[in-house]
Image (cartoon, rainbow, N blue to C red; front, side, top):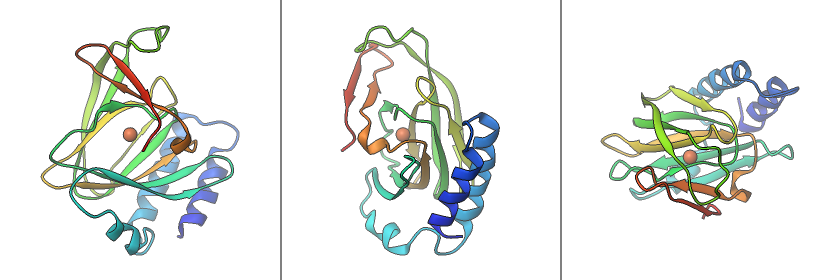
Length: 179
Ligand SMILES: [Fe+2]
């Protein structure tokens, strides 16, 4: 399966409304596609050089459906953040400690939020997680032992959506476009 074929199939599955059951079907499809040699171009894998966290865009559909390749450093956890979109993250290399956070306040104050850890999962190659739209899309990640490489599918073009970064200890929220 090629990336465009995967995206077309995902759009077909998700048409008529995104619900958890459909995200599961697409998550399994992504894990299957990711196992096929050449699904992720070698050039893209090599392009993510170095040890820090980085991400590259693989494809955006006109519907907004967006596939990215991300690398998550083992030396530092990402900030707790959201994307303003549902998502599916599938590990293709290495291991990832994925943490999902729950927002407890009503979101009425743009620069304040109360978040708490909802669950933590260790993901290896072929494992995936999904999350719903805002406010259910808050997470943080860290590679285990080595950087974790992942395919991440989003319902919207998240490069154009400001992210929120949450400080769980102080309750502060910072909003910024992805770099
Ligand atoms: Fe993320």
